[in-house]
Length: 150
Image (cartoon, rainbow, N blue to C red):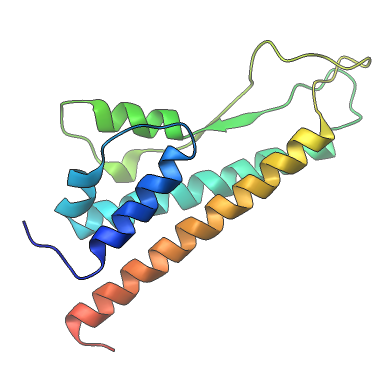
């Protein structure tokens, strides 16, 4: 198995990011196998965090809308399911999904949006998004170094 300089560091950062979201999955082999896998995984993460940011913004915009039910994004669970599967899968096909969480307490107007919770989620989401972008930047720097562009 070919290892590029610093690839282990990228894998550890990505494992840390995913484990902070409650995922205990071993993706080391996947990350060490092919550059495309890493780029596809990071790209899927960036897209998921972008979609999640839009969902949070929509929730906040509907804070006072009677009967509005907040939405969230599933990505980590889908990724974990794919990584646990024994068959072949294409990381570029993993797409985040918007869903409505069940069993959330309602406010007096039948709305379930909590501004403080949404702002907290937005802060966490921003940090995850920045981490994915940094990982992607590091990966592209490694590729440029490997082909002698830098």
